[in-house]
Amino acid sequence: MGVAIPQIETVSFLSHQTILTSGGFPRSLCSLGMTAKLRAGHPHPIFNGDLMKDSLFTIIDNKIIAKDVYKMSLCGDTSAINNAGEFVNIQLDGFYLRRPISVCDVEGDVLTLIYKVVGKGTEAMSEMTPGTELKLLTGLGNGYDLSLAGDSPLLIGGGVGVPPMFLLAKKLLAQGKRVSVILGFNTADEVFYEDEFKALGCSVTVTTVDGSRGIKGFVTDALPDEYTYFYTCGPMPMFKALNRAVKTSGQFSFEERMGCGFGACMGCFCQTLFGSKRICKDGPVLRREEILWAD
Ligand SMILES: Cc1cc2nc3c(=O)[nH]c(=O)nc-3n(C[C@H](O)[C@H](O)[C@H](O)COP(=O)(O)OP(=O)(O)OC[C@H]3O[C@@H](n4cnc5c(N)ncnc54)[C@H](O)[C@@H]3O)c2cc1C
Ligand code: FES
Image 1 (cartoon, helix red, strand yellow):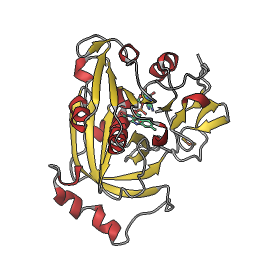
Image 2 (cartoon, rainbow, N blue to C red):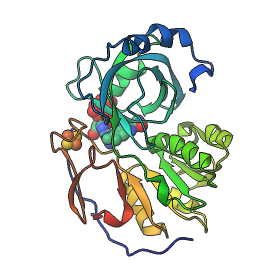
Image 3 (tube, protein in one colour):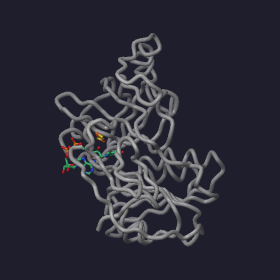
Image 4 (cartoon, rainbow, N blue to C red):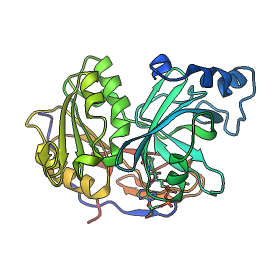
């Protein structure tokens, strides 16, 4: 068990609108798509620094994996994606604001995203077919700091907070850590990626609020006695409950609504001990100790 830290209560947001290279995916879409153009010096750059890249990706797969939840694989220039916990911002025809989605996995030039249909933008994404090109801003967000994990970190994902845990688990396992994962959902038909985390070599616990799969209750009902550190992503009520229940230091990744997504519009503040932080630029990952939790 790690060192107990003082509890601080509140989070205050001024937020507004915010591959598997060869593993079964049709590589022809990839090789015929933008990757070749990018390599040929046709990158559509808007932000061409080390941190962000705006470029075209080609959808190679887009299928439903749970109730209202889709897995989309895309091929393109993933070179700006470095850390687990980063996100991409997707430009959709007919929508002014881009839609932020966490990086679930990246292998070579194949990026995997998992998204839930909650409105018009994600509904439009769910109807897209392989071969469709999408403009993505990549290299966004700070990502999780793995250096604090200790030997046996605990990863806790709630609903669409599960996807960023996948790349994080891969990276921690590659460092020789013993990784435990709690995946929290409302009902059995919402559960996804249980087998994928097991296949990685994680110890996996599923919770559902109605008890239709795994442990009945919330992720806080499944916390183990021993873990060295925690990483989490999910909805705010889950964060607040976790903050009261966890015994170690850890990191929270916020999926608040966003505007620009890269620090320019000042539309995604979180109050911290060090003043206001922009979730999109200074986050989305913040450390437990710095967050001012609002009731
Ligand atoms: C850093 C970050 C990472 C994210 N990662 C993922 C991910 O991996 N998978 C995923 O499914 N979603 C993720 N989201 C949330 C996702 O961006 C929104 O669900 C999406 O933008 C909604 O677009 P829409 O056009 O379908 O819905 P809209 O028409 O914009 O809104 C529909 C409804 O969803 C609500 N809503 C919209 N955005 C959010 C949000 N961010 N949080 C809570 N409620 C929202 C609205 O209030 C409204 O009730 C992430 C958000 C952020 C900021
Ligand atoms: S969304 Fe514009 S500053 Fe964060």
